[in-house]
Image (cartoon, rainbow, N blue to C red; front, side, top):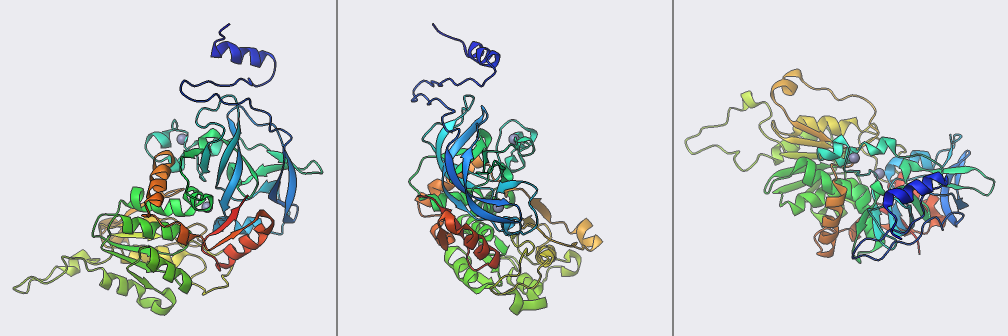
Length: 435
Ligand SMILES: [Zn+2]
Ligand SMILES: [Zn+2]
């Protein structure tokens, strides 16, 4: 007897449980019964009490629109190091981080976006496709982010309930996420590379393509060559920028930047107060010359006649002092100030860094009449369901270099070391990989 979907759900509701019904979609294999993962044991790096450790956990029941993912890789993000290495009493036990990728192993009965067996990238922000921000093309501000259910996904041996950082965690053999966080990918690209698209590198790529919309031949400055900045550098290269000038205090990062698309690099410590003038001088633009006959541009009226067309800031404030070369300003305000000061009038400034402490000051006339266009975003304007599959294709074609972004991989047992290396800035990309 054929049962309508409405009737099945009604019956299930009457029984006081979620509907555990296999979904059959024409042309696709039927999804398996769900709920079988409840009680499953797995390991995760858990911040609890006054520290953090790898713990064996027991999975709790999932919600009808949630997905259980066997994690294959998760890259440690700098923004979590303060929490993950913290020693103050944690408000609740939680699995740090906010991105990852893996294989779908169970789905709630109402899940439509993915099927069991799909490889999925889980970015730091969801894309519901229905909220105001999604509808206006800014799914990196998807409003589902603030309504995603924050319930414990597992419990420790002593019964302590364990939550996920950012509704998805990542430093764990299992992730449980609402389907709105899932981006299926159909590719053989290694997991450690794919996971970078869900956070840092994907953010930088999207910033260049979606927010700045870098034009061919344009002058681009990228401040900061961490994993986010590296994505922006690659975006500028892909867009055929005329110049890609990268400002970064750490030598090994300047070298990787040259490999993936920078046309020159500058050390902000060496340049000191001369950095703004130097960048403006380097970005005179193809029309900045005196015409035959000696006419010059009326510089005194334009005030900022030279400077990059596009500036992408990816520095942010220091949570811990780096164990490599120390940048000129641990508060992260200086790069924002410099971006405003050297970007040409009419240029674009994209800000991606987190954790700045302080204020940027503007000349009122510069602000009022010499405008730059500002862009910021939760994840660089990433439109994940559209962009991540595009980026995967570009990795396959060798256009996006994700290999050079990973400087070290670690097993789950060495997560603390990975987080410490990220805090110290001794690695560019630190990825936890799972067998
Ligand atoms: Zn992040
Ligand atoms: Zn949304």
